[in-house]
Image 1 (spheres, rainbow, N blue to C red):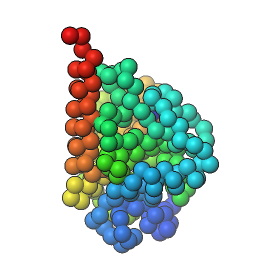
Image 2: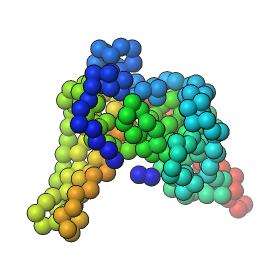
Image 3: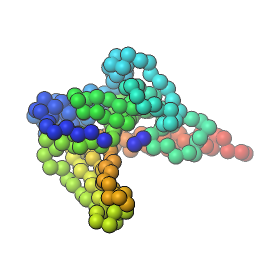
Length: 224
């Protein structure tokens, strides 16, 4: 799984693309973007999404089952036959739910490869692909974030590859943009990356729950 730009960011868009929770003027409370607010229940978000898509929820066990094309809502289930396989999104935690959107249009900005992670019946993490339009909306709303950049040699003699991270934080809530600018041998630029906002403490609990459940299942299938 694992971009779209706009030339101007109207005030309405900057207000709508909230990393703030209560008002457009709030500068310190990061809670998600649009309808995807940290702390919202899956049933509330699912009801709204399925109403928009005019489709049912598609349950899948592999990211390869996510289709391009029309806006579709997926639930990613863990495949018990692949207990030890690497999966960046799936979870064994019995009180967790992972929803995927192949794309979502948020006030004229296309969000792609959206991942919604729920734990104990609340949204704890939202992530999607990076886009310059989304970056400009966030920068316009919150000003300059903490920024870190690293440069590396590239396949292009006249350019360097760059990995850049931008970060906003408030308490246990963290929002980051991480993207990579890379050049191929013909010096053609490619930009890829990710935006994410999450509750660091709740995500830590989710990961611990998933790891514990996975270990339990592995021990159950070990030969005696």
